[in-house]
Image 1 (cartoon, rainbow, N blue to C red):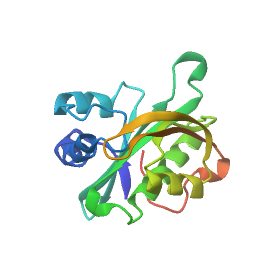
Image 2: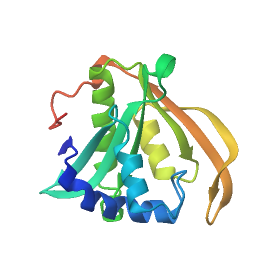
Image 3: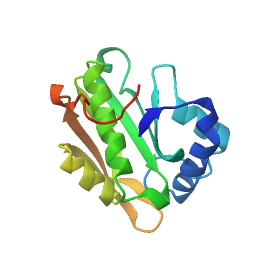
Image 4: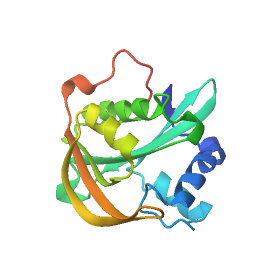
Length: 173
């Protein structure tokens, strides 16, 4: 089930975010980011929508989304996702992306853009391509991976479609 974030969710979210941030393998975030900084970043400004993926009351992943840029860029959305290590490969990320696509279409955004997808994040790239995203461009060496060195950083995009609006799966705003 995908549902809206509640303040009581934060401790479980931090347990998901912390190891992903510390690993420094997928996000352009300082690995030493503390909990307060992570909370401010993930929960974002009032225009940010935070979603929770849970099974049987257990939080397994999260997404956050909102306008990619203010003003003339606000018609394109941006989103990011983090999935608990033990839940990866079980469809949690797919459910979060599909929820985002539904939200983007319902809210009238033109599309969904990912600004910084490390080319070493192969699972995410595979999923995004399966869901219709394309790579618009790559910044060569734009991401300093802790083991693989400087690797490309992709910008990915998918236009919103009316058929994205969820009607047959459990999703809440």
